[in-house]
Image (cartoon, rainbow, N blue to C red; front, side, top):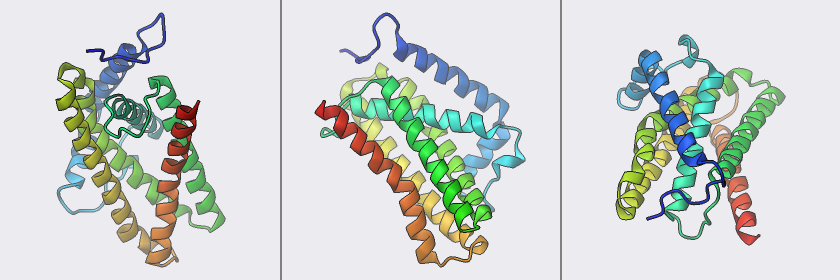
Length: 217
């Protein structure tokens, strides 16, 4: 069974990426146990939303971890054909696509928040996205790092569970942004919902278009 297709010739980029992500994951968990516990408990016990700025972890480090995690997730979902209509693409291209979509979403969020004078609301939305991204990262990274040890059928089912978990994380993020964020903005709930859906769904549409164009070539 070929478990590492589409790897650049001359260097085992896939395994280097796995080792890098594993090392950073272990380091992050060991150095940020308080933040890890707060993020996990946030999804099971109702309480004020955890504020990442209260911890020493850099927002840039968290963003990089989330991008790396989502890149590996996208690569494995495409490789194991969880969605057969999507083509397989290289891991490096997955990273660039996820990074571009993430930066684009951040830029749109900052620009719209500044345009309408809603900087505080935009900051809250960013906090929610980072916390939900961390939750999915903590849950999915160990599975994705060792999924090559199992058969294709088990891997596909494991990835389907992660897809469902990712959707749940996104849904929690959306609902908490609406419930908590409405006290920090002058917009109605309907406007908040429309704004968040546009902000979070637009990068996925761009990603899908890039994938289809890549497949066509």
